[in-house]
Each structure stands twice: as C-alpha cells, then as structure tokens.
Image (cartoon, rainbow, N blue to C red; front, side, top):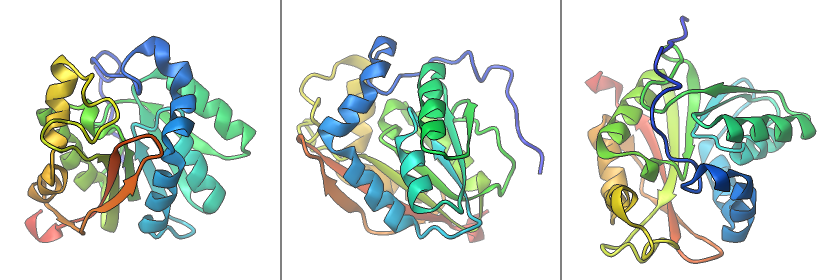
Length: 226
C-alpha cells in the first residue's frame, strides 16, 4: 500500500501535550501525577490486541501508551504519530530503553500519512480536545480510512460538565482551548464519532487520580456507509 505524504505536514500549528512547548519535558511527570497509567491499561485491555496486529497511536506524545502496549503485547507492530519533534525524540529514547521496536513519524492527525486499510487498531489518548471542530472531524475521517475491515478505534479524552469543571484545568482554560474543550461536554464525543460513520459502544469512564474523568470510546467503522 502507498503511504500518503504531505508537503505541509510539518508546518501546521499544533498544541503540545501540556499546552506549551517548554513544558514538554514535564509531560511524563504530569502523566504520573494524574494517574494516566490506569487509563492506558484500560484502553489496551479494551482494544483486544493480538499478535500480528498493527496499531497506530495518533498524538503519541512521549510514547507512554506505545510503551505500555509493547510491554503487554510484544507481537503487535507499533506506530506512533505526533507533530512535536521534541516529544517524538523522548518517545524514541524511551522505546529504546524498553527494548521495543516502534516506528515514530512526525505528522498531523488531520492527514494521516498512511495507506488505506493500514491498521487493525488506532489509539488516541487525551489529544482529541487539542483539535478544533473541523480538525476533529478530519481526524475521524482519516481513522476510518486507515482502519482495516473489523478494525477498532480506541479514543480516550476528558469528559466535561457544561462548565468544564470535570477537567482538572477546566476553570483555568481560556480562549481557543476552552472553546475546543466544549466539544467534550456530556456525550458530545461519542455522538461526533458516530456521525463520522462509526458504530460506538457505550462509553467507559475512568477517574483520574487528580480530579476529572476520562471517557474511553470504542468505535468500529460502519462499512455499509462507505
């Protein structure tokens, strides 16, 4: 299959994991403090991975989810995508230390640089809220394209009440990020995924160690609508 490429894939604006580029070295500290390990373990269990599967982590950041998948399922072919070169460098170092073989690509969720039907599983962990509405829809269309028949999207993101108070930083968010987070209110995320042509299972909710809740969505492409 031919891999897609984009001339502008390294020129678009993006939001780093903690909102600012200079905070990227602290991402792994935040991962531990908020208790995201339990979210990742729930995602991996729900994914039903098997030897020979090819799995993509969109917005892989510093590679924590990829490393957790590799440790539990060494027979899975792992690929990570992120626009942040600093985060990717950290992910590569962590994978080497763990003895894992992981392909890491720089790119954007809105235009995945992979061929149609390339993956059995696509993961997305706490990056959906970084995207504006149009980019969220573009990501879901791309995930639907790259998933193989019978493939599965496993997407985790914050679940908010109307005031954003179920997110640990909800009261502090301002401007564009607060506007983007409003797309996560109530059942907005699973409804958006369903509208993109997926059959979505009931949301699984995991409480973070420090405030907030994360919803895990399992969705399979509805091929009848392709």
